[in-house]
Image (cartoon, rainbow, N blue to C red; front, side):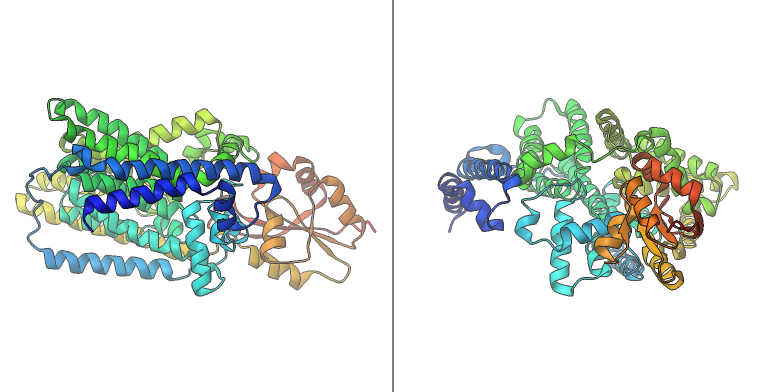
Length: 558
C-alpha cells in the first residue's frame, strides 16, 4: 500500500469511528458502566475524544497537500567525533553504572505520595486510569506504566518504582544527546557521569512518581527542539510533538518546558524571517500545533474532570505557596549534594562561569535552562498553587550541562594562571570534573534510606504497645497505615475522635508526619499533641520534613 493510500484509508477509518461510535459505547468498552457521579463528565470526554479522531483523520487525508510535511534536511556540517567506539564504550559504562545505582535499594520504604500512587492508581485497570482524573497526584503515563509493571512483576515497592528508575537512566542518555548538540563529546559524557552519581537524580529515579519521566521527556524533547531549529526537518518536529505530548501526559509541568520552547522558537524566527515560509512554519504546525492536538487527545477522556481538579487544589498549606520557602528548600537540597564537598560560593561561581560561557557561545542553552523555570514559577504563583521544588526537577539536566561547562572554563583559567600549555587546559578541566563527580558520589549512600520510615514506626509501636493501648493516626499518617500497611489503628480526623480514642484506652499512641501539613489542617489536634503527648521516638527519612513522629500519652483517662 502506498503512503497516500494508507493516509486516505487510515484517515477515513478515524473519521468513521469518530462519527459512528456513541460516546457511551466508547466509555463502556474502556471501563464498563460509568459511575453515576462522573457519568456526564465521561460522556463529554468521550465526545471530545471522538472529535479529536475526526480532526486527526482529516489531517491524514490532507497531509500530502502541505509542503511543510515534506521538508528536506537542511545541509549542516556533522558534529565531530573522532573516537566513536571509545565514546560508545564510555557511555555504555555510564548508563550501566546508573542502572545499578538506581536498582539498588529500590524496595526501600515508600513515602506518602508513592503510597497514593500504589493505593489509588497502580492497581487500577488501564481503562479506568485513562478515564479517571480525581487527583493531581495521577501522573497519567506513569500510572499506566506502574500498572503494567504490577501485571508483569507483581505488587511490590520496587515494581512500583521500576518505571521511574528506567526513566532516570534514559534521562542520562538524553542529557548526553543534548550535550552533543550544544557542547563537546567530552563535556556531554561528563554531564552524563555527573548525573549518574547525583544524589538528587538517584532519589527521584527511585521515586514512584512521574518526575524522572518528566526529566527525560524535557531533555529529550529539548534535544529534538535544538535539532529542529538546526536542521528544519519535518520528521524531527513530528517526533518532537509526540515526545512533548507524552511528557505532558507524564506530568503537566512539562507544559512549562513547551512554553519555553515556543518562546525560544519565536525568538529564533527573527534572524530567519526572510527564509521560505514552509521551513519557518514546520516547527509551528508540526511541532507546537501538533503537540497541542496530541496532548488534548491524550487527556480528552478526562478533560472535564481535569479542569475541576486543577482549578481547586485539595487543601492549601500557606508556607508551600511561599517562593522564599521554595528557595530555602532548594538550598537545603543543595547541601545534601555537592555542597558537602566544597563551598557553596565556589559552586555558584562555577555556575556563573558556565552561564557566562554559554551566553557568549550558545545562548540557546541558557534559554532552555531559565525560560521554562521562570514561566513555571510565574504561572504556579499566579494560580496560587503549591510551589514545591520538585516542580522544577525538569531543569536538572540543563543545569548539569552548564555546571560542566563552568568547570571546564575554570580549568582554562587555572591553566592560564599556572602558565600551562594550552593543550593541557582540557586535561585540567576533565580532572576537575572527575573530582566533582567523585565528591558527589560521597553523598550517595544516604539516598538509600527510606524516604519516610512508616515501616520503622509500625515495628516500634507494635513492639512496645501493651494490652489495652490504642494507636491513633492523624493527617498524612492516616492513609499509609490504613490503606497500604493495613493496620487496625484508628484515625483521628477530629479532636472529638481523638478524645474518644483516648477515653477508651489505657494509653494512647499517636503517629503523625509533616508537621507543616498538620498545623494547617489539624491545628486543634496538634495543640493537643503538644500539650498532652510526649514524643517517644522520631523516624527520619530522606524526604525533607517527612519525619515520622511516634507520640504517647501516659495519662490514664479510662
